[in-house]
Length: 512
Image (tube, rainbow, N blue to C red; front, side):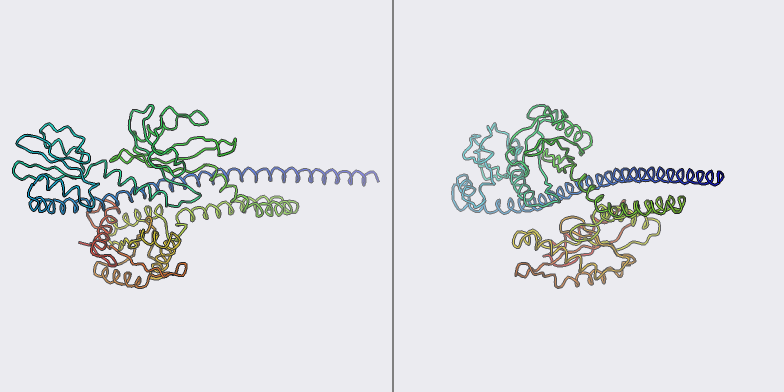
């Protein structure tokens, strides 16, 4: 009896010890899972932060490309305007009789006179007869060449003793461009209400009034006002100085500043990407509140939480039955969950949210790989750049929703006519890049013709209206002289430009 009691007591002790051991192990295991969740959340935050920073960089650089395009179009317009104006001004002055007065009357009467500055001089006396615009503010000393220093475009007309310098001032060109850029910024829509803003650096040495705010959709009241490098954020960081230092060092910089939330005591952090646009001393910036990244991570955690709870319950039950197997299972299952979620994040990071085509970040890596493959094998894919004709007009006339539908249809049409080995990339805005494997030089024209014909009907229905769209396309291959894939992209882009300048709604091949 005593032995039986001893055995029962021993078994009870063993059961108790096993139970305590199991509970302790399960408790430690659950704590371990929590720790892994924390590590996973931290890694997810880092991954999302890098993705958002790259998105800021892409958005700013894409907008700079838009500015460059606007400047190119404006240059063509101003050059043509100057040429036409010179011919007409001479004809008008001769017909008028008094050459100097005739030139003055012409420039004062033309429809676009607000863009012209002119000065008319009697060379025999160095007397200024007439002047208007920026040139009317100059104290003429007899040096005609000095008159053109403030002009972006200028022409000298001479007739006898009459000399006329006329043109378009640099200030006018910059102001006109800034107005267009400001309008573009204010209608652009980005994720979570993000926006671009522009500041002009007036003093690269910093200090008070070192820069002027030109465009700021988030706070229009400060447009036209100056800012200081001595200004501190809510945590006493000189964020303007940090921006200026980075711009001077590298031409671009990521900065952070702390601010107080509107109608709240909460202090939040904002991550900003800024890039130097040297021609006009502009700094173009875009930012994102850091709490948006935290909220994204939190939402992802909430979505995964039920699965985590089920997993803990399952592991706890299995641990009682077979401790070792349960431990192995939970580690393996947790690892699979981590890899699956990480894979989802990687996939989302290279897919364009609107069109579901690959995004430019993916495209840059992909084209680099294709170019390296070409250098090894000598076999080049066909490279295509496609642009929707007059896309801004579609947005302005039918609204951005209609524009979005046009972009989606472009992608549907492209994917329908692509093979599994071909790749489509949204390069930016309404511009797409296509990469077609195993297309020879002889087969390039047939490919171009097939792609172009697939866009024969690019109409969509928006709010009861039929919106018709067309595309212009450029094609090329990699070339032995290319130093990187960017050379082929530029060549295809030149083909696209030929298609545009040739009347649009066509394709061009630059493959020589």
